Image (cartoon, rainbow, N blue to C red; front, side, top):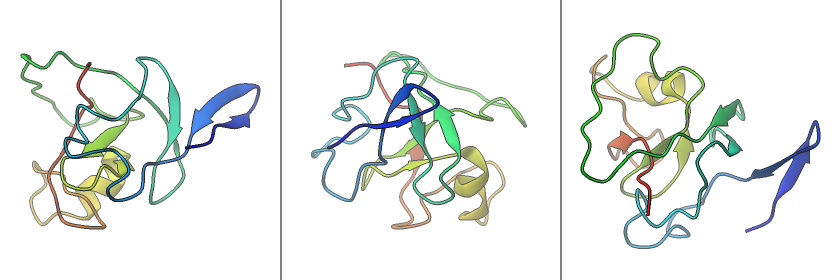
Length: 107
């Protein structure tokens, strides 16, 4: 997986299917505070790793600008793209495989 620079910052491309391992939400190789791109719209996102034992409850706009990861294929998405792929406004999904998305978990 290569790194890209934009405005002097290193950025990783969005993982492709299967590249993130068998547990993409945990085996992603991302660092807290890192910047990445949405796999659908290429929007710049910030990685905010959560604890494996935490539960995240969100409200409208709380996930804006944060990277979400598909638990099935490992694609990184912004909240707008993940919500657009779902028929439920409270349950974002992956636009590629239909899997559930979550904040990446700290390893």
